[in-house]
Image 1 (cartoon, one colour):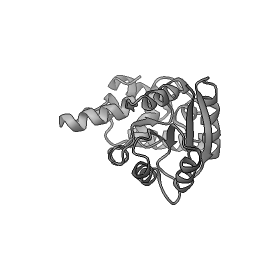
Image 2 (tube, one colour):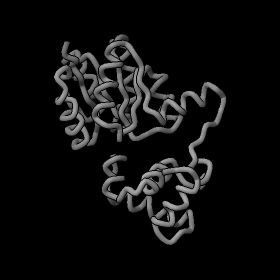
Image 3 (cartoon, rainbow, N blue to C red):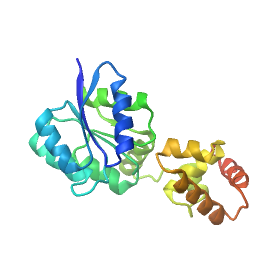
Amino acid sequence: MTLRVAIADDHPMYRFGLAAVLAQSDDVEVVAQVGTGEELLAAVNEHQPDVAITDLSMPGVDGVQATSRLLSQRPDLPILVLTMHEDDEHVFAALRAGARGYLVKGADGTEIVGAVRTVAAGGAVYGGSVARRIVSFYSGGAEQSPTERAFPQLTPRERDVLELVALGCRNHEIARRLQMSDKTVRNHVSAILTKLQVPDRTAAALRARDSGAG
């Protein structure tokens, strides 16, 4: 059985790249690629896909609104969120809207294809960091990573960058993994050095490793 998939993401290069990754699987066919939530609504109505994949931050109708509106029309449609956002506000807004899966950009092709198959079969899929947030929320706990405990002054995205710095990744590799530009990575690294009051990325990596990261 071939799974027919519609994709919504307002970044054309990421959208095209995602479609190319999905197209490598014999059982997945991308039937629509659009850049807004409004276009996703129209594409689903026209193509009747088996799964919809949507970003959250899009102009006009965003991913949460699109999810809610799609499910009011097709309650059985599996919707997989694929986004850069992993904070509680975005995660739980998407889940409340009815998303059946939630992955953070940076997930590899195998994980994404597996998620499409799982939600199409009626299951639910949450990336590691998202799953930890859900467990923490429902357990009433405050599960934190080593970098969260050691560096509360850093933003979540700065901690993501720091953890990759601690693993020895250079800026271009960090940009690829986190789906951001090289310039954004450089800005994050600069902010990390300032906040940690260290002279260079080597010192920052050592601080992160001492905390248990990397």
